[in-house]
Image (cartoon, rainbow, N blue to C red; front, side, top):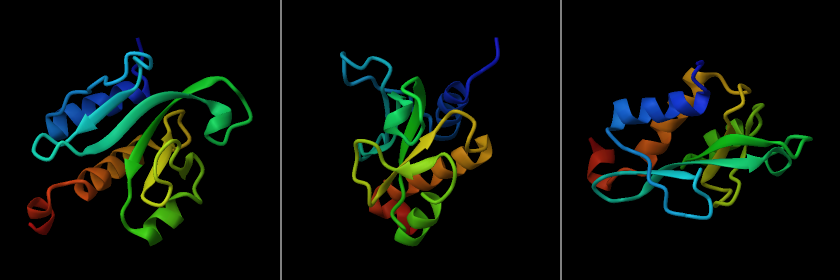
Length: 128
């Protein structure tokens, strides 16, 4: 069976950051949060969302990931790209939603995860 981009994202986060998904909402059992182990801040939220909520012309459910982008210039550049919008259900100035439907190349999704991980890291880790 072919792995979905969501499966690859989960595997990437597990390998790079030794972090397992948490499922904090029983009602939304497909929504997974990834946190830092030291400060417990989220760096990624993966969820299923109706396509029309994230810029598509279809109500069909797709998988998305929310990621933190602290740099306002980078944030503004990213939300101009296909498959990336200001965050669904989070602070739209500091977070983005990336559609995991193939609009954004896998390597770019992984790079954005890295940026989000660093943006939410403990301050001492950021300075290193």
